[in-house]
Amino acid sequence: MCHYFYTHIKYGIASWEAYKEVNSLFAQVADMHIENGDIVWIQDYQLMLLPALIRDGNKDVSIGYFHHIPFPSYELFRILPERKEILDGLLGADLIGFHTADYMRHFMSTAERVMDTKFMLDETRYNNRIVHVDAFPMGINYEKYSAAPLKVAPQKLSSEWKMKFGERKIIISVDRLDYSKGILHRLKAFNRFLAEHPEYHEKVSLVMIVVPSRDKVGAYADLKMKINEKIGMINGKYSNLNWTPIHYFYHSFSFERLVAFYNVADIALVSPLRDGMNLVAKEYIAVKRKNLGILILSEMAGAAQELRDAIIVNPNDVDGMKDAILKALEMPADEQLKRMKRMQKIVSSQTVQKWATDYIDELLSLKKQNEKNKTKLITDVNKQIIVSEYKRSHKRLIILDYDGTLSPFYNNPEEAAPSLQLTQIIKGLLADKRNCIAISSGRDQDTLSGWFGEYPIILAAEHGAFVRDNGVWRKNLEDRSWSREIVDIILKVTDKTPGSFLEEKKTALVWHFRNVDPWVAALREQQLFNMLGDKCAREGLHIMKGNKIIEIKQVGCDKGYVAKQLLLKEDFDFMLAIGDDTTDEDMFREMPKDSYTIKVGEMSDAARFYLKNQHEVLPLLNLFLSD
Image 1 (cartoon, rainbow, N blue to C red):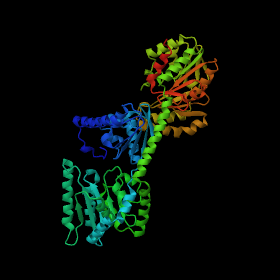
Image 2 (image 1 turned 90 degrees about the horizontal axis):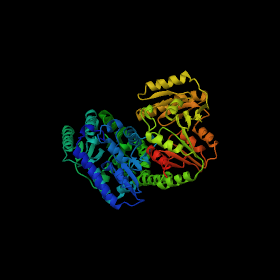
Image 3 (image 1 turned 60 degrees about the vertical axis):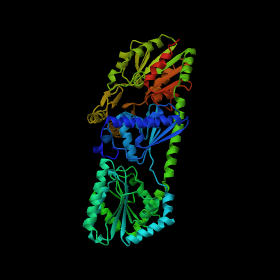
Image 4 (image 1 turned 90 degrees about the vertical axis):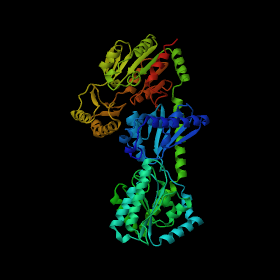
């Protein structure tokens, strides 16, 4: 799956149950050793469920996860029946790391579509935690590899290989047996090179090292057989008494022997069909510190994002790889040196030690951020304090947002009518004459009147454009006729965006995209901002982002204005404001410092506290009604 060989996938309940069992066993053992304050760093795809399993232990730990292989695009990942369980497992981590920004982008896009979580740059909130995603290109122990050619054993082995090959150019290829490594494509390219360039016969040899891996598995055994056949065909066709085109080794090599091969090789041919990073490319560069050398590197390897001075190839393009071999063989020495010097600078600075340090540093930084967030999360103790102050007070102001606060969001906004529990709470609060209750919403007058008209509460419609107090509506903004140009632009985008719709209010235009694919929604949202920004500014309009909406309204009235006006009504000694949207930030900022401002769903710099989700709002309000 992750290497895009989806035709090799075999679905089965038994396999999935075994995968879950392995992760569960790791979690059980880890749970025996983990203590509060510990850092847990989980490595690779075999343990994608483990972050959430450890998190469920409710321990105060920082959890990191690093994905060492490619992360596929959403279009591929979505075919997995277990996609939600896997993503939920990964999102249990505080920091999810990948080798490249491409894999990082694929993960975020997939999580947004499958899990309906919204990323802001590289962060999302999941289960009331900040989850950070970042790219950390893994390096090697540069000093170990760069110093190795100077040691006795590698020097001796290098001399032996130079004696054996003489003046011939050496191309080295090192892989474990795996169909993702593109070994057969590489052999096809070398075969085509020999066929089209007879002038290089007896002048170049390919040293192919394949490390055994899973060769008892059918697909791998079949690959091994095809490699053997292809090498046999090429050597049978071109070799003579003085020259063997391909020197094939099907076994692992000691560090010293591998370094010796890197040292004498003129070219490293690294052409995986997919690879998370590929450290062979970096090892070759580190060893070539004092020598000439050329790296031919697949664009499908994560290392290609860093090593742009390699000859970059598409591993599926056999002709392209053939041409790259010729280019490498004919590259002037001064160009080789320039390229190698630039790549060595990268490899020497981006080491495996730096990779680990950077990752842990970021994880610790996130730990501090999450600890700070916890101080704003309303606890049972906070609730007791709020209720105690409420009961001691003599004049109270309670301002409440509606959608996402008093009511959950619905795909169809018309379905969000007040629940029986909500109406009972409102009646209970109104029974106490010390309470002044206000609902400040983006909803229009008619909707709020239909839902709450029978209650003696203050209603602020369209973010304060209309306010009902003592049963009488007043306008804070005049109705306006909307520019046909602006409306037509929004309607045109709506036509191209299934699931979206335009709501025309008396003082605002609202484009809704709650039912739109997240990627399309983000694209259309930015397109509308780009198309309407200047036009709205010229007409004195404010364009703003809300919770899966874009709203265009007149300047001069918002929820902050409503809060300011309400605060002037009485000398309140208890003030509470609850909301979930960016539009509620204005309200929070206008409230006095000693008031209780609560953001629903996520932490806010403007609010003193936050609740985990909308389901906690009504139980909190219900505490005010207890004896």
